[in-house]
Structures are given as C-alpha cells and as structure tokens.
Image (cartoon, rainbow, N blue to C red):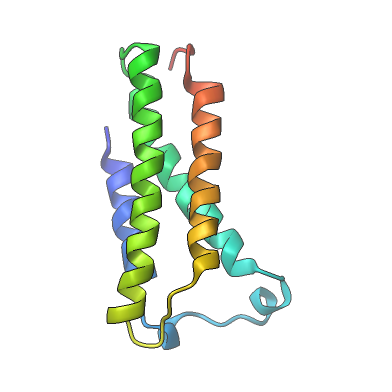
Length: 124
C-alpha cells in the first residue's frame, strides 16, 4: 500500500510550500551547521523509502524492483528540483537553493542505495 508514502508526500509538499516567515525558528537548529540540508536529506530519503517498501513487499521480480527503486529516486529528485522552482516563483520569503537540490539528491540516492542493498532478494 502506498497510503503512508502518499500522506508523507502531501506533508512534505505542505512543508516545502510554507512561506519562509512561517517556518519555525529554534535556537538549537541555528547552532547546527547546515541543519536545513540534513532535513532535506532525511526528508527525501524517507520519501523514497516509503515508496520503495510496497515494491519490496510485492511479488515483483528483482529486476522490476530494481527498476522501481530507480524510478522512485529519479522522480523524487525531479520533485525536489520542481519544488525549488515553486519556492522561487510562488512562495513568499522562499528562494531557489542549489544546495537544497543537492541535498534532495543525496537523500534520494541514499535511499536508492539502501533499497538496492536491503530490499533486493529479501522477503518482506
């Protein structure tokens, strides 16, 4: 079932579309260098893993699972790039950040590596 992944996708879209002045500011987050980049890595990694779990639990062949994991990672990277353009042009007090795109890609590719390593040839 993709319900958890779809719910998480909606939540991530809402968070990424929040105006910049509505984002929470905590002193601890400002003390951790590049904390926002770590959030992007985790957010996109979890998104990819949530969309990969149903394929892992399915009876698909390993080849089809492999194709699915790559498709999920590539779509997540496209989603991250698209969200940066949406932030640039449509969300107040948000901007385009190439480092966010890179972080989204790292999270997506990290999840792909985990899926390829742990979900191929293993039973649910």
